[in-house]
Amino acid sequence: MTLVNNWVGILLLFAGVGASSCDNSASGSTPQEPIKEAKSLTEVTRVKTAYSSEGNFEHLITSNGKVKSLHDLLIVAETDGRVETSNLYTGKRVAAGDILLKIEITAARFKLEKLELLKFNAEKEYQSLLIGYENLLKGQPEKQVEEIRQKLRISSGLATIEKDIQELLYEINRATLKAPFPGVIADLRVQQGHRIKVGEELSRIYDPSNLFLEIEVLESDLDILKLGVKAEIHPIADEKMIFTGAISEINPYVNENGLALVKVKIDQSKGNMKNAKLLPGMNCMATIRIPLQKAILVPKEAVVLRGNKAVVFTVDNGKAIWNYVTPGRENGAVVEIRTGLVGGQKVIVSNNLQIAHEAPIVEVP
Image (tube, rainbow, N blue to C red; front, side, top):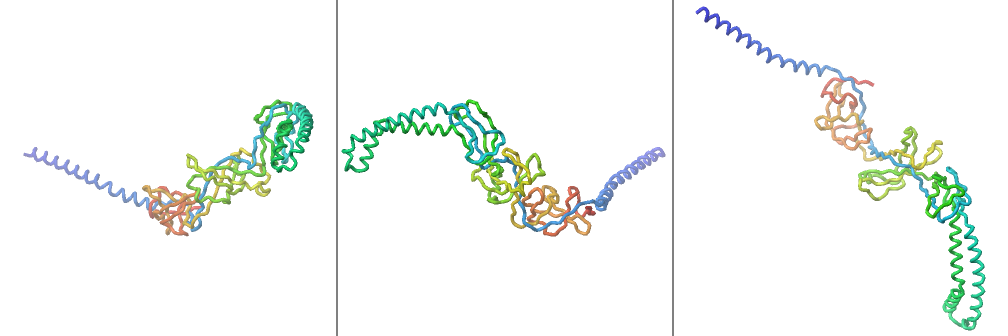
C-alpha cells in the first residue's frame, strides 16, 4: 500500500511540474509583444523634412536627339568630267553664290563653237526662205504669220540648232557648282584633278547659324506641347553645358512606336552660346517644363507605398503621422497630390520606408 502511494505521489509531482512548465511557456510570449511595441514607440527616428506647397505643377518632358541644321545639303555631281578647279576644303566657310568647283568643259566649248557656226548658216537659210514668203504673208492674221515663220525656222534647221545650243549651255552651267546658301563645307570627298560621275557625292554644306534639335516625344504629351515652349538643351558629352531653345515644329504624325517628332530651335545668340560650339550630328538631351494647373506639391521622396497604397508621413508634435494620399503627375522632382494633404504641411522625406504611425522622430538638416 505504501508503495502504491509513493508511485501516486511521484506521478502527481511530475504532473504538477509539467503543468507549471506549460503555464510558463504559454504566458512567456504575451509580455514580449508589449515590450517590443513599447520599444518601437520609444525608438526615435532621425528624418529630414520639407513642406508641401501649393503651386503650378511643371510637367517634365525629357528626350534625347541629334543636332541638325535647317539648311543642310549634300552636294552631288550634276555632270561627268574631271575637276578642273576646286576651292573646297573641310571646314571652309562660304557665302551664297560662291564657286565651289568647276568641271572641265573643253569638249563642250568646242561643241558650242561648232553650233554657233551652224546657227549662222541656218539663220541665213531662214532669212532666204522668209523672203520667198514675204508677199504671201502680207495682210495675213498675225497668228497665221507666226505659224509660217515657225515652220520656216524648223525647215531651215535654225530651231533645232537653237535648242541644241540651249541644252549645251545648260550642261555647261551645271559644270560649275555654287554654294546655294551661306554655310560650312563638311564631308569633303573630292579634290582637284579627280574624275567624277553624275550623281557622285562630293561634299556637304550646312548653315551653322540655324541649328535645331530633333527629338521624339510620347503621343500622350502632344496635347500639352505648344509652339514657342522653352526648352533646356545640353550635350550628352558635357552635361554641364546648357543651352536654351524653343519648340519650332511639331510633326502632326505619330509613328508605330507612339512617338512624334518635335524640333527645338536652338538660341544661338552670343549670350546663350558663350563661345561654345554645337555641330550637326551631336547627341543632346532636351528638357521641356510645361506649367499645368495649380496643385499640392511634395518632393517625390515624401511618397512611399504601404500595402500598394500611396502614403505621406507628416510631422505633428514630434511624431510621424500616416496620411493616405492620391498622387497625380510627377516630374522627377515633385509629385502632385490630388487628395490627402494641404499646402504648408511638414512632410518627411527620408527614413520613411519603415517608420510607424505616431512613431517619435527628430528632424535633422
